Length: 91
Image (cartoon, rainbow, N blue to C red; front, side, top):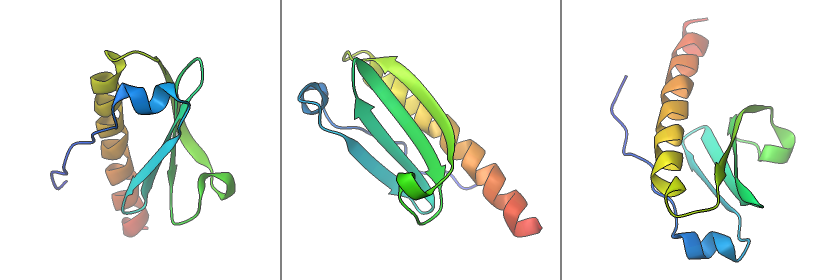
């Protein structure tokens, strides 16, 4: 699999004001929803999250120390996506 640029997320202050953030790398999509914690959603494809199957979810404490952990989790999920995509192309 090709090496991809690691994920980065916005500063904690952005999320403490309850702002959501979504991003993508090709057909790999994610959304970060700040509630009592960071709630993350992953889905594949060109549609929005509301019209897609959520393939992974995770929660992290709403603290600065979670930001690198979230980036690591997104990296792991992207690797899973790459394997899924290769399998889809082979079928």
